[in-house]
Length: 184
Image 1 (tube, one colour):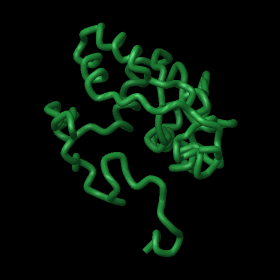
Image 2 (cartoon, rainbow, N blue to C red):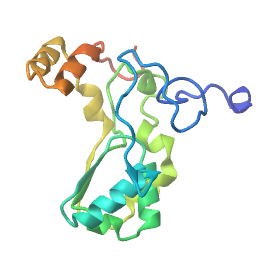
Image 3 (tube, rainbow, N blue to C red):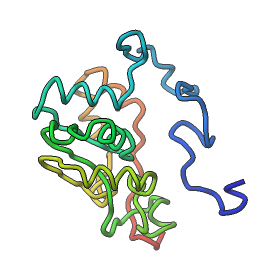
């Protein structure tokens, strides 16, 4: 009903285009299904929020947190434990945009009017960015859209021979060259 009233939303999910599914549903992946099971603490499945909280309490002032997506989990961690930000060493995140130059539909359709990580959960960004972190480093999306994974880079990564390097080499798909916002 929402889409009928307001139009198609650009993003409906990481796995597929459904609006909602159970939290542990993973669709068929081209690289195969995961074999690693979620960690459990005290007999219950662990979640990112409580993992973050436990980790900064176990290693106060030593943990740098990198947030590469919406800040929902961090906002929930701050809400559960207001000391959480002060216990971390640093927050590094990608968010916001100044003037990204890309042919990515997120920017060509909206011409940088929004950036996904803030757009998807602005309330979480509001909570996280007003929390008392010791240090915050922001990389705006402008940097991300300028960074292209080339075939040469993939070959260099593959040469490392680690399981992760081989995975990246096998399943990476270098994108097309960038264009100026709104001119694709």
